[in-house]
Length: 255
Image 1 (cartoon, rainbow, N blue to C red):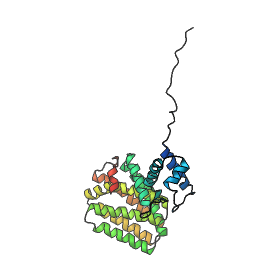
Image 2 (cartoon, helix red, strand yellow; image 1 turned 120 degrees about the vertical axis):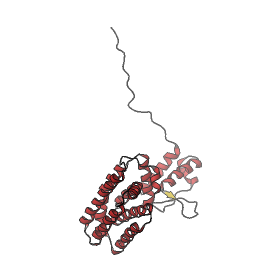
Image 3 (cartoon, helix red, strand yellow; image 1 turned 180 degrees about the horizontal axis):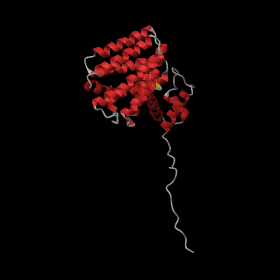
Image 4 (cartoon, rainbow, N blue to C red; image 1 turned 90 degrees about the horizontal axis):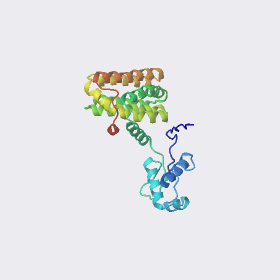
């Protein structure tokens, strides 16, 4: 009787890896913060106390705390040596999200599609919540787009315009979604304004119509104009010869 040769398959699972103690410590503290057992402003135990509680060396605790500081979950106020629980600001969070997107090699077309999905709703909510002071600020930003002497200056104000609208929407999730997208799109907008003579004019027309819809508290009209505004970006890219499958670089976050 002939024995058949057994066939071997690649293992379905990889061996478990043991995480460094510092990582486990930072994760434990992070979970306390996310579950609200530790709230913004609450002081953390000292390094010595944490080392005793976790039964590790102070150097291990120090490494864990550095990781938490880098994420903005803990920090020091003034010259204090005592770490407290902090809440990362929207700009800081958006910056981290933007860098993650850039590292993931997202393309301009992906960013544009995200903008097309988010921006119209942001505009509609802004029309519901905007006040007279908010409208005056939006008008000031639009004026700065018009008078900017360079494409760089104009684009920075366009990004500011979208950021202000996200703030007016009153929706923090949409605000966090909008900021990294608009910042990463800035380089393509700059090239479009440089290469398409009517680019800035079309942006100004759309922004003024959006502001007017917000002034008149017409969410549907604000949403409609924002949809056209974002659609126009793509047309501008095509006229400028910008390939939308271009990957966004880390350098874009400097804008």
